[in-house]
Length: 98
Image (cartoon, rainbow, N blue to C red; front, side, top):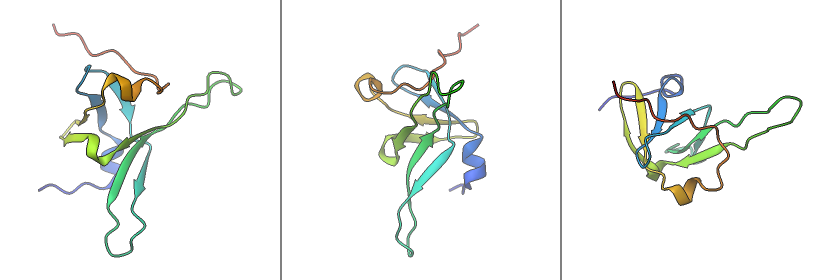
């Protein structure tokens, strides 16, 4: 089993398996406050502050249970459209196949 540190995880693109969209990159993490365990609970995709506060977007928190796989280049998550309905994160469309 490969071990990752937070610097490694920040470099991986987060892809939603439900629609193939790119959600962005992890900017922060939530950990359990237990000193013995310290488990990772969620990935946070940082929202943008916008220009002078205009167009500000909220952070997107992806619970650990939604993460399907962590690979060499990407983190695959499964977020249904209803779970992203309230999300105002900038999502890039999936890359087109050639």
